Length: 72
Image (cartoon, rainbow, N blue to C red):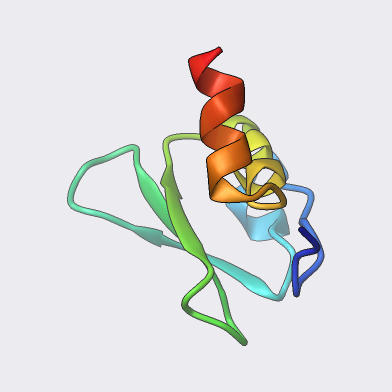
């Protein structure tokens, strides 16, 4: 499944986050809510930028295929 957005590279420092993405603080530090500026429906929570990378890559797969991968 092709994404309708480019999978970003998440830097170690939030100041370097790609301009099309925003990371908002949440009530559960250190968890951040990452979302696209032009499409707020594309969003997810992550505790670190290094964990955000596999999450966005997983968004490329169909949900059923993704579940099969992780349940195998």
